[in-house]
Every structure is written in C-alpha cells, then in structure tokens.
Length: 272
Length: 298
Image (cartoon, rainbow over all chains, first blue to last red; front, side, top):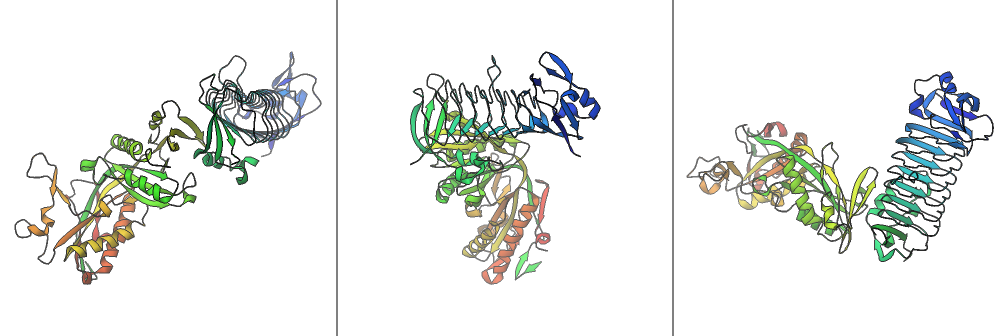
C-alpha cells in the first residue's frame, strides 16, 4: 500500500485548518470521500480536493507534499500512524498528539507540540515560539512524548511543560523553559535570556554556557547517575543527541526558580 | 541408583509456590555494589523467621546494568505479594539507599509492579526529582554523597521455593567440602538463589515440635548424634548431613540447579566420603512441586 499523499496544488493566501486530516479520522474512507472532506480556510469551508491532489491508500501513513507554513493544526490529536510533511508546517503542528510520529522536513510555526501527550514530533528545520507549550489560558503544556528540533526554536520553548522531552539541536530563544512544571528540555546550542523563568520543577540540560538568571542558585558540580540513562534513551533517534560523544554525566547544577517553587534545575555540561 | 559410589535415595524434595522479584544494585565499583547487595539480602535465609528468602543471583558487568556501572542482581522470595513488597521496600530503604554510591533498578518485568523506590522518594523531603525515561519512572533522591537514583517499581512474579537436597557424608569436613563444590556450580545457574549462609544449611527442620509454640524443629531423623535414640534415617557410617535449599523463578530453574549441584557432589563420590544424597519432603502434603532426585539425575 502506498502512503496517502496530499500534494498542495498552489500557494495559499489564507490559513488552512488541517486537523481533519489525521490517520485515525481517515480510516475506512475512500479517496473520493477524503477529497470531499471540508477544510476550514479563513472564513470558508472548502473540500480537500480543492486544495490538494490526493492519492495513495495507506491511511496509517500520510505524506503532505509541497507543504506551506499556512497549513495549521497538522497532526492535531494524532492517535497513531505517521505524518510526513515535505516542506513547512504552520502553527499548532502536533497539538494534543496522543500517539504516532510526525516528521516535518521544513520549519514549524507557533505552538508546535502544544499540549502533546505522547508520540514523537521531529522537525528538521526551526520551530516557532511556545514549542510544547500550553494554549493561552491553560496551565499545562506538553504532557509526554518526544519533540526533536534539529534547527533553532523561538521564545518560550516548553512553556508550562508538564512531562516529556524536548530536544533542541540548535539555539533556543528567550524564556526557554518558562513556567515549567516538570519534564526535560535539552539545548545543544545557545539559549536566550530569562532561562527557566518561573520554573517550578523539571530539568534544563545545556551544552553551552548560558546567562544564568539571578533566581537560580549554584549547587556545585556533580556527577549525576540519571544522565547516562537519559542519554541512552536518545539512542534510537536520528539526531546528534544519539551520538555517544554528545553524552555527559558531569554537570554544574543550578537550582531555581527561587522566586517560584525552586525545585527546577539547570544542568550545564561541566567543562572541568 | 548409585553414582560413583553415592547412593541416590528414591525420594523427592518438596517445594511450594512463592512470590519473587529481582532488583539490580549498581555502585561506583563491584566492591560497593556487592556490599550493598549483601546487606540487602542479609538475614533472609528462611521465611520462617526472616519474612523472606533472599540472595545474590550474580555479578553484572557494566554492559549489563542500566546505568553502565558494575552491579549485582539479587532475588527476593516471600510467601505472598504483600510480604514481598514490604520486605523489598524495607530492605531497599535500609540497605541500598544507605549504601555509598549505590543505585537501584528493576530486574524483572511483569504485569504486577511492586514499589521499589516509589515510596523511598519521600526521604527526599520534597527535594526528590522524578524522571520518566523510556516509559520507566525513576526517582532522584538527594543524599549526602550526591544523588540516590532508583527505579520506582520492579516486577512481581510467581516462583517456587524450597527445592533442596541433602548431602550425607562420613564426616563434617567432607559434607561441607561437597556442599561447597555443589554451590560453586549452582551459582552459575540463573534465576535461582541458595538463601542459607554460604548456600548451605546444617539445621534442616521438620514440621512441628513437641513444644506447642514452635511450628518447626530440628530434623532429628537426620541428626547424626541422635542415631541411637530416635527413628533415624542415617546408617552408622554417616556422621554429618548438610542441606542445600534452592529458590527459583520456575520449577525448571530449580531442576537445573539441583542437577548441577548433585552432579558436582557425585563427581567427588564415595572416595571423598559422600555416602548418600537425599531430600526433604513432608509426604507431599506441603507443596505441589516435587523434585525426584533419581529423575533429575536420570
């Protein structure tokens, strides 16, 4: 069976809500029925076939070709199967995802992996602000799963993160790990200002020196036993994080945010 | 049946169902992993008074442990799940949490998880940190030497306890030497422990006693000093009897351990003063698992 493929016919002028096109909602539908599904574009509802050329039969594997950064909600609440996006994805990619895999070969917009529960989101390009965050007004962001960003991420990555792992091979913007409740964010590149702002619990794992906020206190240099286990869990990823040379277990530990609960930590790879 | 001059009694060892678990203890080096493991499996020879039977299964190389450090795997057996969980938690808290550089991991998967470090985390007084890695929950508990890392749960499985055989010899040193050789071979078998000191028990028991408060008492039929005054199972030339008790995760595991142990004793043979191999049973009333010595060696 060939993957169910959606090829975008032409550049979009309006944003499109792609949430109906997830694996579990397409099983047992014919190509004609899929082509007739309504998609919200701006203020209008238009059928899938008006925007995409649809082919293939395997609804457990979806491929979106010629993708655009105006395609929002790709893989929303995906509950198994895989979605591959050849190109960019818009906002809310993988929002509330429960299982499965989403791979984006380009960039993703705001709120990628927002309130995600399980599964894996891999982005070969960059991610916008509020990666793995919570919807405005909500208190809990991503609750599980793995997010791997090979490029850079915007501001407030992991805002309100509750559980799960966010791996960033590039740089992270300001307020990385803000208001984190728990979970792990690992950044191989540089991080911006206000790291871990209002962080309650959780771990920020850094490879490069960072401007440590005043609300984080130095707890000294330590060899931590959980780090080898954490790095071992990255072994199956197609990422620098899977590289043995990237692993370490000796860190400078900073505890904070002391203006909050103060049970969070920034673990900076020790050079000593 | 006679092997190398050693008579194999036409009898059987009687074993009973138990609940078991395995835990892996790691440390900075094998020495400290072993110290911790010895503490955790200490005072655990018999469920009669210890609450559980526990022992060291084997030493693990760094490649075999979850955190890549030297380790030791231990098995704990108890009569029921509740008792097992209580013993595991108490021993983990007092013997592994306290042991320098140690970490504690689950050693067996099952659909019945029991707490390993799940409740020890409260020792962290709010500073403990949870990490969910590959679907397994770990607790990082701050302690004075750094951090104690422990997996939250391990698995509980059905198991078999009380496999045994008796070595009857012409002298005490000969009985002990034969048991030592047997234990050395039996320790190579996975999934079993020999919970008594050094794997050998010299005070085998029978069910009941003349004293109402005691449920078990000395197995007088196999006590050489009582040969003339009790209904003995010993011939005049037997001066010492020692027993090896085996707990295993399955009947097959105990079978294997008994076979290699008894074969090792038989290899020493009558020349080394070994007269007979026998086994302890209670007429088949105590447990559903029967290990017939002649079948095992057949």
